[in-house]
Length: 129
Image (cartoon, rainbow, N blue to C red; front, side, top):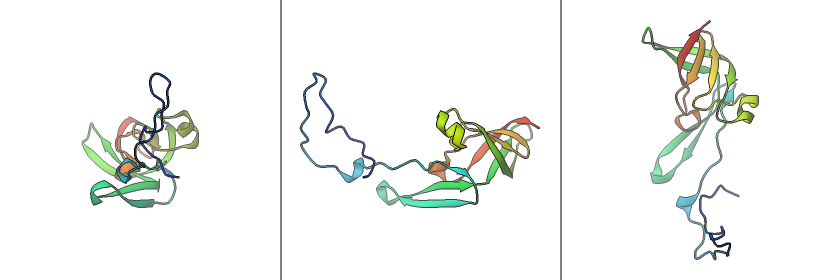
């Protein structure tokens, strides 16, 4: 069963039942989260609305880290996921999403891209080792 973003079958404010006046439509279709983790690079290309393609990053071990003081961006290996504020479960499982703090060879960095939607991991250095 696919993820569906609609409210045809929800209840009314009064508590009464809403009757579905039509079937599910393709444009209301959603998708499951990519939940990017550490590992050998693995991507999934998905066709989305408008015929566009979305690259979902499933596994990655490298990150493009920008040092704001020097203004330099480097491709660095990810050592581990320190914490993820998005979800406590993601924190435990080491899932990388936007805003997650990761440990790299340069130091700690915060993810600024959306790996599940952009297909890349970009980060900004927050502290050095």
